[in-house]
Length: 259
Image (cartoon, rainbow, N blue to C red; front, side, top):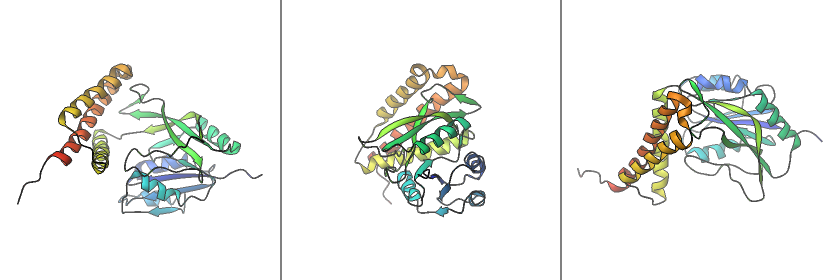
């Protein structure tokens, strides 16, 4: 029997800074690289085409889940490994991925552990490690759901989930501005998704959830062991939590002025 083929798939926008380093960690041992761009204005396409001809564009942004589903429709290989441009596959993870594809066990999908580098330090606490995410599966077996944000791979009771050895290194945020922009985008998408479901919020809810977030990350999940970065990350996460509830409150409880 021939060994199953493996594709790497990414959805990207303005990732020229990270993309080359990411793709170099999979170059030469995957059969296919599929990249779906949502309208980059930097050198993302030029970098991508150094590694693959399967570069596609969908400027009409439908949300993270639908965009990943579209990207998967371009995959021809037997297995698909999902990466983000700010991630790197370590040698140990590579061996584990190759072993899983070679074994080709039926109805099996795989999760990987991410180790994040944030503001000059690897974060091993705060509830951030091991950050297990489902990323490898047979292409015809499943796909991401259609959530606008925080999309997940669809898992049925008949599937078994296994954890691969080795980490993906995740360079989460370039700087504070990058964090704020990224978290604001997630908050906006989260609030819009909740609004579509008829959900409402209050400022009080935002405060309670923000405080809960900080206590969980910094104290319960031992974020204090990550030094100043752990404190900063816990404060910022609490702020981001408050912002998303506040945004939902603004969308559902305030009335625009009459002109």
